[in-house]
Amino acid sequence: MAYLELDRVAKQFGAQTVVDDFSLSVRKGEFISFLGPSGCGKTTTLQMIAGFLDPTRGTIRLEGKDLTAIHPAKRGLGIVFQSYALFPHMTAAENVAFGLEMRNVPRGERTERVRAALAMVGLAGYEDRHPRRMSGGQQQRVALARALVIKPSVLLLDEPLSNLDAKLREEMQIELRQIQRTIGTTTILVTHDQNEAMSLSDRIVVMSQGRIEQIGTPQETYEKPASAFVSQFLGKTNDFAATIDRASAPARLIAGSWSAPAPAGRNGPVTISIRPERIDFGDAGLSAKIVTRIFQGNHWLFQCESECGPATVIRQNDGRSQPAEGEAVHLTWRPEDMDVRGVA
Amino acid sequence: MSASAEERNARTPWALTAPALMLFVGVLLIPLAMTVMLSFHDWGQYKGIEPVFILKNWREIATDPYYAEMFGRTFRIAILTTLLTALLGAPEAYILNRMGGRWKSVFLLVILGPLLISVVARTLGWALLFGGNNGLVNKLLMSAGLIRAPIPFMFTETGMVVALAHVMMPFMVLSVWAALQRLDPQIENAALSLGAGPVTIIRRIIMPQIMPGVLSGAIIVFSLSASAFATPAIIGGRRLKVAATLAYDEFLNTLNWPLGAAVATLLLAALVLIVVGSNALIERRYAEVFR
Image 1 (cartoon, each protein chain N blue to C red):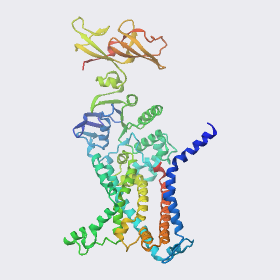
Image 2 (cartoon, chains in turn orange, purple; image 1 turned 180 degrees about the vertical axis):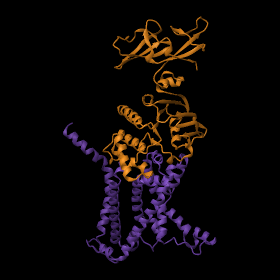
Image 3 (cartoon, chains in turn purple, cyan; image 1 turned 90 degrees about the vertical axis):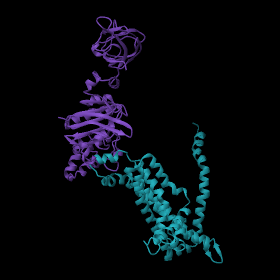
Image 4 (cartoon, rainbow over the protein chains, first blue to last red; image 1 turned 180 degrees about the horizontal axis):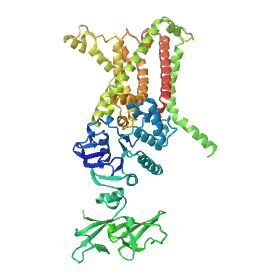
């Protein structure tokens, strides 16, 4: 049973289509990420759910009710903005209390809920601080508390962590996930950071140029990318030109000096893509020369020049000796680890 | 670094600011000091200015109710003008800020336009529209039968306030607009998503944040209005004098320079006190918004 449902939603600004044919159904309590490069329409979609923009076509339903007919102030959604958009003339507690005031929650209950919300985001004791006297991370927590205290039916997060430094962002990711799990609020996160999307969400909606490229769990989108865009956007990937030779029996897929039994269906020139961590060094396979070798603690990163163009290889630092720069090697991988596509 | 080089470095800022400083001292501080001194000199119809130190002029201003009435009028007009520009200018700036790119630049030009035209020309415009029986608006309204007598505008305090507010409006709009630029563009959406209606958003979220802009605009408008000369001279004429026109008359018509100097000095002192005082109050009150 869908909790939040978007049905063929589209948004046009003049002649320009920013979002097109966006259909998604979200289960109650789910954590969904809209992932894509800037300008892919992810924020526009979020703003249509929030009600700051009206969809040109399509419907948005929450628990079966048409959401687009409801005024944004009455939708009861919690939103955390990229800039936090805290009220600078109010203290942290006043900021958090604002939504409750608008709902005419009695003063006693209000104070109690504000205190609890600030404690939940780890800001107990900061009630009387003004936002401009707080760090970016603290402001972010106030914004989260302000959105959650009204017990929203859906929590919308618009790139909430992009203004934080790397270490703080990682801490906030873990905390965000824990808070979301504890209170079970259905959450939609807009992000351009694939690591953030993968580590936080139950499902990822990968978007490009206003369209959905793929909807799936983080593992599905990474392991079985539906398109070249998805495989390139989520993590690194190697694309090699290859050919399927159906003249020989049995038919074979050939990339340079690497070959394997051909998959059914295609014929002629194809593109194969393999994740860097799925490539191994072997005695036979694609001939390559190691250009650079970078040690990164738990793994090694190799840049190679192969018969089929540049290749990136990642090997676990498992204690075995690794090939040196300038060394000639053979790249090999299991056929099931690669993705075969027609030449675009 | 050697001691002499350090000394030279310490002197550099002084050397660099010296030309501007000399200009400031020469054309502002010295004439100002001379005006203050002049206000303590004596004057007579036949003997002219006598360089003595007496309190005659100051005693006259303090005891003659004519001066109290005139300073009262000056500040009453300045306060009403400030209120009028704030009431009209703040919404004007808010609407301007919400306009789209092209319209915004067109209307910004419309708002700034008056600054490009001489104050005298703008004020005479009002006189053409409302000046007695021959004023354009008065004529139209009377021939349409809407009013019997012309709307009293010339030589009234109301007329002076309206004309001054027109002249001062750009300063208020620009000041509020600058404050609006500092607003987070998502702040209204944030309030909206928390359930606030449009009136609540303006009252609880926008107003407190642009108040510093309104107040600093008010300081500019108030001090310019209280010391304005051209508009009160044209609209108020001889009948409704304000501090600036009185000082002018004392200097150039009565030729009682010392009395004119005392009026000018008092106006300056009062303005400095009011502006510095209210600025300090505003900065303390809105410390959190200013940071």
